[in-house]
Length: 73
Image (cartoon, rainbow, N blue to C red; front, side):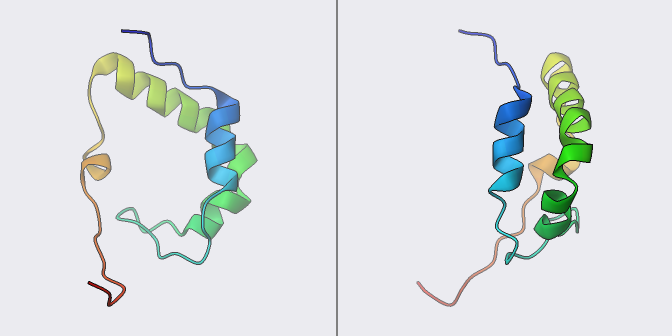
């Protein structure tokens, strides 16, 4: 299996593409905030992702999700 590498360009693309009209996730951080501070959090996020991968430990918040319904079945 190839080694997983986190590239800052890939992380930045995902931050740029956040939908700011969505509600905050389990962490209560609104996507608009993440998008607005994307340059400042880019490198720290890369470090967090790499440390998590190398240690094999995920933060508990990453294992939780908020599921909502838009009224359609």
